[in-house]
Length: 452
Ligand SMILES: *Cc1c(COP(=O)(O)O)cnc(C)c1O
Image (cartoon, rainbow, N blue to C red; front, side, top):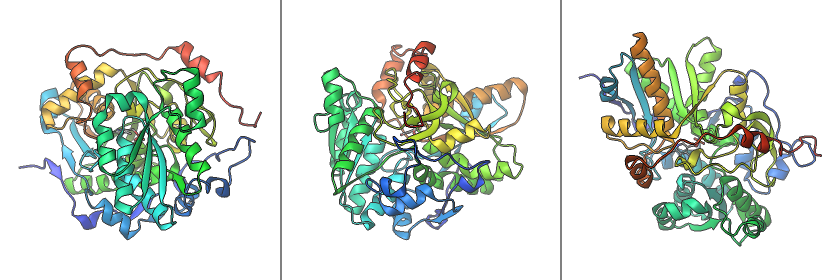
């Protein structure tokens, strides 16, 4: 019997995180403050602990994972690598399709890979309390779990539409001991302002970030934790790509194309950065970030300085952006509805090392169903974006008779997304294209990086 899944023992959990910065074609652009000057570590120290700040600014290629963090990650890592044989057969493709499954974590996605070290570095710095935001609930539940593991109180600002649509994500966070507040809320200036303008404001990730950052900046006992976008988060996620490379080596295969869903870019970075060094050394592997057509940051946004939140409380970062006040249409892949993208991923896309594609919602749900029927795993709608791109490539391989090896990240399970699958099965889902007029209008409101 040839392999269906490749498992690694606990002791093969990576000992170091891989930092892509020294292997980038050019130095990363600095984060800028409101005055147009680079932000100092001291300023960021108001909301982040020293261990995290050091990683955020580091240009060391390898950073040791503390033993306490490895021990906590070992609750579910190393995660399995699967070969999707029934999917290959169903598609009648000569391609091999492999996927790394991150849905085995307790919270159900890759996000605890960074929640655990972020909670730990805050714990060792003596911080007792964290504020954060969550869109679909994946990051909030990951930080709730990690807070519980290291004895920190966690307050989660949850985008109001998700709070109402996904009550069980909220239950999960509360069970792990966190407090969950629908955003916009009356607890912060940013929230109150949004509610005055529109009492029925459904919330957005950018606005929930504003609320959490405002709270962390205003309370000395509270720090902030972000689930994606920033360099240290992508660094923490590189356990994914490192394990995958080891597993592929055990299976004796090398990927031709790697796909990962892209919201803020952390699982893209986590899977792909360990392959970026190989590309610099001559490997021809293609790396493809997969985003929704309704939130086309990498494919239709602009590569420029913008804020990470909706009202400008965060530093400005050079990244692909649709404009900080972008309000995404109500698609179901909530974890992909963010106006910006990781500066590191953006830079690699800009430099042509990573490619990007945008997928319409219906195609992603079709792929999600295909994965569910052929592997048994019900993917999160976010993950289904990478699956859909891999399926499309496998179909091209069938038409062209090419035997490629395809790999994708199945970043999480969809057990809390069944209402969305119900709507898909009932024929009620639509494709949303984000109009060029809306893109142009939002880009017209970008901040001036020179501080004007
Ligand atoms: C949050 C999330 C994503 C997107 O976030 P990235 O930072 O782009 O990785 C993708 N898949 C799942 C399951 C998620 O929870």
